Length: 474
Ligand SMILES: Cc1cc2nc3c(=O)[nH]c(=O)nc-3n(C[C@H](O)[C@H](O)[C@H](O)COP(=O)(O)OP(=O)(O)OC[C@H]3O[C@@H](n4cnc5c(N)ncnc54)[C@H](O)[C@@H]3O)c2cc1C
Image 1 (tube, helix red, strand yellow):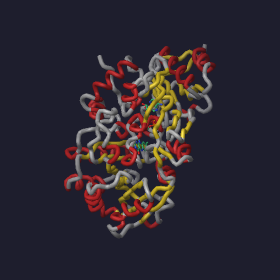
Image 2 (cartoon, rainbow, N blue to C red):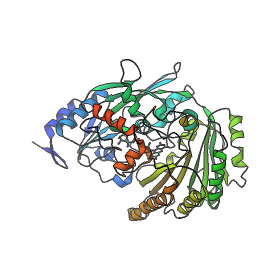
Image 3 (cartoon, rainbow, N blue to C red):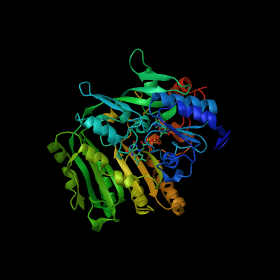
Image 4 (cartoon, protein in one colour):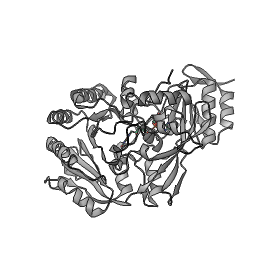
């Protein structure tokens, strides 16, 4: 009988055929048409990974079938939603990728302002459905990110100060556990509330989420926002402004981000600026347009705005604005944490890091937190870092593998230079593969042990370990 190669042995082709016959979706093995496309990871650093099988699930039954198959064959499992894992967790050499990407159903209940979203949706797809009713939930800055992976990690985006993190709006989920059972996470008397708590920031540790229920909020459809670009030599001035302005009691409706970058060759940027260092003050004001204009007036008052793209913009337009800059295939690495403050010394370190960045696509992001996200009690979810004023994300992105060492060193060295100004916490959506200690930093004492207990209930064998891993209690 023919076989399918995998890293630690072979898969019997007859067994694989049985799996295929039980699926509504497809199971792709090396050599099958579509395998190469299906196996590809978003992060080019992991482009060489060759799973023994990629199961493209059409529905919950396929997910159950794939989990049971993986467990009985002893295959290492990687779970894929939108595919944006920075550390490449959603692919695996010689194992099985269980890809929920084809599961794209969404049902909006405009009266209750709820949506049930299948786990394969990306943010632009879910926004499309919810914005038809003037509603939304917090999505990511790049709308091709998967709803499921993003929300399971927390979820910080343009609505974080007005609506909280994505996980704060999660009110229920269907989950296939490691033993192939479908369980319902939620707050109802017949639902599993501790599992819901764990899904709000605990990542993909507890099973494969097949759908998520979100409490939506009125958003737009036109918001006041976009970006104001300043010449890069003003980075220190902009950071100081961001510190004072952020501490001046900004309304919850306003979520600003400071991005120290290089002007991309994008149609919305004048050609003369392409390739030049720029600092972008990116903002979303989810409220009355005239209030948004007033709230952002201090940014314009800084003067000499190189490109002023602030104004009324469809929320979906803002969500998709930078998608073309974040396509598949480039090499990526992140170093991130929470800044305890933006003191002058921290600012100096950030500016030095900015001046040394090794490739145009490398960026330093400072997200202002607080607002609705800051008022959620630390123990209400598995995302406890509610008091941190800023999230810092150092993104290394480059194209040439020959630049790997330099680009990786830049992120690590810049982070090390600023580490004394961080809280020590970690955010798993921006965490690379940095070992168990940093995963614990993402949760801290109390939350970590509680998550370990939930892990022991739903995945005692740690079958789902290709993630920011929480080891089962005991
Ligand atoms: C271009 C880009 C922009 C980003 N912007 C933001 C941002 O603005 N804010 C932010 O907070 N984060 C952001 N992120 C980080 C992003 O939220 C995480 O990488 C997230 O894990 C991606 O989810 P995914 O479904 O797209 O990825 P995948 O690679 O499919 O999944 C990543 C991991 O999530 C888990 N997972 C995914 N789907 C499921 C499921 N159905 N059931 C169980 N586990 C699952 C698995 O552990 C998997 O390994 C960004 C990432 C990229 C690459």
